[in-house]
Length: 487
Image 1 (cartoon, one colour):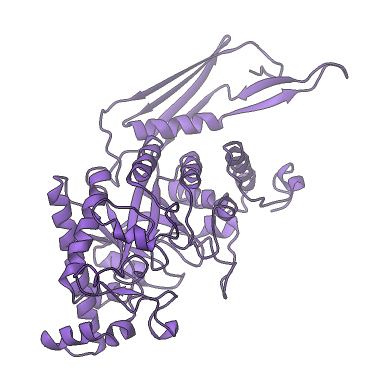
Image 2 (image 1 turned 60 degrees about the vertical axis):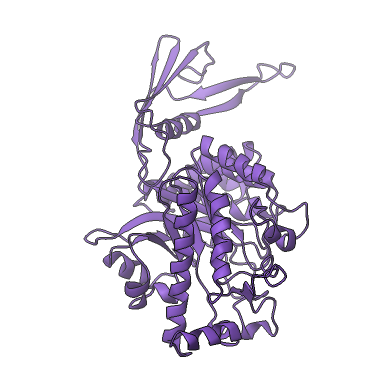
């Protein structure tokens, strides 16, 4: 420890952490607040963390760790060895709680497989930054790496290789690891679009075609991005397979945990070019116009939600909230008819100036923001997208739900996997994702150019490096040593 004037002293340290409730639920209703007090008397430093839940207590302990730093005292002589010491604040009093209950980060393991070690390392960085939801975009048209006991065909045919799969044991390991660190895992099985790899076995199994337009060319005629593929909403077997998928997932997820059902970028041209769908539309008295395909899209979601409910009931767990991406279906006026605000949370991937989040809030929906012009961390490496530096990430504000019946649950940074694998993961995520963490925890009013903000951010990058996270450099080292002179 260091006395006044930074003279090394022989101090003791006592840390007490108390949670007043035995409630271990971790969801959007969890109380994550805490109080932290540090005092010094004589040669003893005492730190006390008090919280309602273990999750708040954990945040308090994380803050306490940020009030300590290790350094070296200059050697007394050329021949003497420098001495290590621990610097700590002598007194502190903190009362803290998050502004938003959903502080998320999306990882895509379908476009590039990410080893379990990379996911665990990401969870460590999230916990250090007080992010609390790992949105795991596990499957897409490119691959299906989840090895599920009830439908192993999906991974057997859909994974890149037999070694690039997530076994039930690996999934359970990730869930346990994340939960201990106060991080929920929001699993996403994207459907009905973004389905191709792993879904082509239906006819061989006597179930009929489960997927349509799979890897069809020219791809621009059938999907947003290759390989193409959309589930067949006219085939009842699709819902039976989804029920089995959901049942396997619900068994390992915590009771009541939400499940992300995807739901965006449905390409009507695929369904319109598929005879099973056009025959089904005709048989049910519908045509082939936009309204008919919107109705069919909503019918698919109703079927998949029913499959989820049946899966939840089959394993004896509480009701599960479903999350959907924003889409044409979730925009007014269609959302009023097709998306039940009591069952669905809508995650909007919109840009500044798009009124969709406010429109949904005014209708009473719960909304998660994934601002693609600020929080899509894969942007800047492909197409016409632009890289967003940490200041742009931090300074993007969320809409207010004040005066509306809706709720802003929070937001997410997204790192889509087209050009990201385990070798580039850390640098693209960190420390920029930590800038979003500050926005979602504190919702600060001061801009990133305000005094002290950059120094605090760069210090957190150092903490991430100490965890083994290969966070990218965001300022010259000269600037890091001279707070405010490069802002």
